[in-house]
Image 1: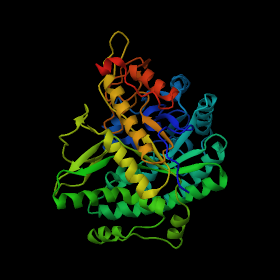
Image 2: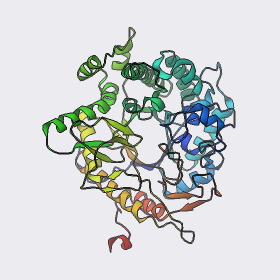
Image 3: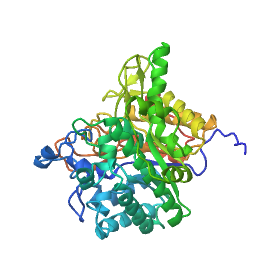
Image 4: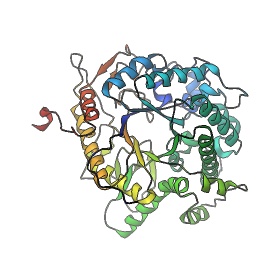
Length: 477
């Protein structure tokens, strides 16, 4: 059926924000919670160092911003902005502390019951990520993470538990956060800690296959237990351009991008694309599959594509394919501004990416991570973050233009509506939020919450359903 042309955000558009349990909750040893992957990292989730983490006097993830105890206060502020949706994750280790328990931890289940009830009290839909870099450490150390097929039934049991428990409260689900970051950083996505002499590419793609199977099993369970729910896939899809028009740079850029798109290709098309065969052959990859795996992947596919978009970069001939929590990294683009942390700001690239994904998959899209990490200064109890307002304005204009282009978009969840622990660096100084949290990199502070100027701007946007995107007058001078 031909889609009607529209220039406005849909009436049921889901405005909101996004976070992750391991970056906001704290309460690291409360309620029977077990140790997760991030608790054994040191200077961010790319720095796995169990020995050093255990000996640290202060680990920033242990308390984070204490959402575990302050969620009612924070959700009330989200409701004041007008949130329709809040994306967070369930900490796997709150439900199954080691991942292998026969019975779930009731204290953990109860915490999320209370959290979801508080959201629903304000008519805020929970959008829940099942696994957001929070794998139980036991599964990393005992099985080598998702290298082992033994994780599939453990994940399946975890999913069945939370689907049954929250079937009346949560109707929007995501399986794995940024699954395609397996190609860049398999440590925190799949628990793949490199082994001496190991073929790393073999480990990455064998683990990826196990996660594709687990993803489809989760979809099957979700449809059976919560028939009116939707379950999406979530990928990191910040974009990359050729640095110049050298055909080699253009082709290498396509090759790099396709390695990221491989993951949603499988989850939305339901089969392994032929281009992956050459990559596997060139890297001596032989993925072991069991009978019925491919049929399962083909039958149970995700219903919407959630994704993160923070920046773009450019690729020059011969550059290695490298990335971090924000996406691929190449050479700076001279046409773009750069954030305090070196991420280039590209609103038009957001529109480009939305069109790229819609053209490729023809499924509803949901940007669930988009935001600006910056240094904020408190002056007389105020935070004048015009830079964040400008970033938000420009990206929402691009989002609206993509809707005019015919892209179907479910909602927009700004990353970090409240300051939280940076995943990539474990800093508090890298602030995203509309709400300031009084805490520094060393853990000092009162944890007091303060509204920034951007709080009122986003509130205006939501109240008008995206019709009032005008910048404050002082930013127009």
